[in-house]
Length: 226
Ligand SMILES: CC(C)(COP(=O)(O)OP(=O)(O)OC[C@H]1O[C@@H](n2cnc3c(N)ncnc32)[C@H](O)[C@@H]1OP(=O)(O)O)[C@@H](O)C(=O)NCCC(=O)NCCS
Image (tube, rainbow, N blue to C red; front, side, top):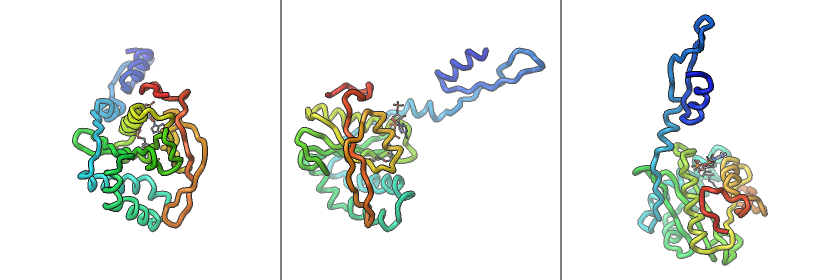
């Protein structure tokens, strides 16, 4: 295998080939290593999206708290995080939200494992704006261990599917200005900033960027809805 082939092989299968040069002889292939076997596995993983129902309240509470804690505890005080987790993921509050006709929760499963969830709101259940013709993506959260495996993308595409079914004019969301990972994810999917709002985390006020899906920048992996 020559260097050109090696390049192609690396591109196509993410395989790393190791060469040695033996006293000026042509480079010889010594061994081929799968650069990242897990990359291949990740691509083959089956992700299923299921609507959550009121009986799923404890599952939702568990993944909601776990993903929020993983995401924000490195940047916030333990006290503020705890206060938010207790209040925003209280059983009664979640039960009410799960029964809300203007909201939808969706779980992502990798096989039998619950790995992420989505919450969308429309009409009066949107946290802001409350435009009758808009849909809010309030939450897309994926367990750290499963990030980078397209779970977030599947959940996002579910949100876009719902927006299409509801025939809304636009999709919007709020994301913490310091949450760079999520910002890049939404930018990549065609969102642009249109405003800023204050978000309370415990005793702290933080700035959320309000983003709207820009139809011109919408990713081609899903049907255009606008
Ligand atoms: C943001 C988040 C939902 C993305 O989900 P994910 O499962 O890790 O992302 P995916 O594997 O589905 O990636 C989908 C696309 O976004 C891109 N992407 C994901 N994270 C990215 C990052 N940090 N920077 C750049 N691009 C990124 C991927 O490359 C992929 O693009 P491609 O289809 O062109 O290859 C996930 O990281 C997460 O749950 N973060 C913590 C919770 C959070 O912050 N949620 C948002 C709160 S508003």
